[in-house]
Image 1 (cartoon, rainbow, N blue to C red):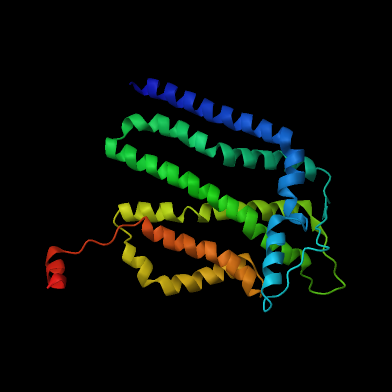
Image 2: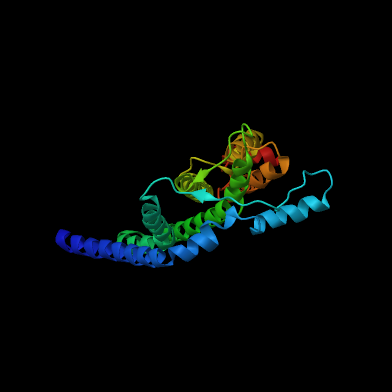
Length: 267
């Protein structure tokens, strides 16, 4: 293919990507009122499934702080005239970007595939599948676990009883999108570990050698994400992160020892 023919193929690929993003954005824009009530604002109510699960668990274990769903309801306020319109539009766009991302990657993959060798095609296909699956798992963990726990703590926290909490819609959406997308990105750690392992930079022995350091670091990250003294909610955030660390080790090959070193070990 000539240079101009490549440009034509690239242009058609970009048109497909933009078209898919526009279609998803329009679809989410039309469905946004329902999505806001039943999905985005669901953690604001005490009947959210995670709160009910916590309540059942703490009632069965006497030494844990008793978690209750009674009376919990976060009421949001809007303090800017155009905020609701802009949030309607921006939330539609970001949701469309997330859920159409695999399809957009497929279009990009279809464009670059002819330039790759067979072994590169197999590696890129594996990275594509694993990366998408882990991203959506991270988004699910962020929505169903991390964000509700963080919201529950921060919504009830008061530096003084004289200062009531009035949470704005902008603040809620900023925290909602930040935590959920951040967890989606963090869950790409196994893919990053696989890429570094394939490049020979990282080996499986690294994860065993620095496991204690990683536990301390992940506890700090969990404490930052969920700033509460309750050990139960801290563990809820820490355990997925630690499992992610251990899963990353499975994606990395062990370090190859020199033949002379293997001979000495066998003897």
